[in-house]
Length: 177
Image (spheres, rainbow, N blue to C red):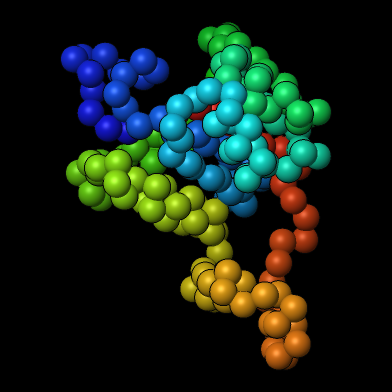
């Protein structure tokens, strides 16, 4: 995201580096996380993995060397170089999420400054992750309560427990944007 540097685009420009992960759950059930980063180095990927990925997951990624360095502690890391003959190697789900996020920013906000980009990435990630929910408002309320009140406090005072995920995602796809 950000402005282009004299006609170039992608890595090596002044665009805001972003990291993304997409859960490969069945259609309409997956989730994503999009994060602004200082760079796409191993340190950024290490922090991203620590904050958002499960060590027990099988992680599919492109062949970016920063990912290999940062996610080396994940035993399920499988990196593939891009191959136009192998549609699965191009990581279509994460590219779709990145494209949808860019369209969301350009279409709804006509571009953003770096100042608020992470807030909009959080909003996009939450909307994507709850897109098939019939009760997204209640889920948002539960998540807001979980952020401000310890779970033990909710369990002690509430008669209805918040719905928590039964298990962590089994497969994630990650890609630097």
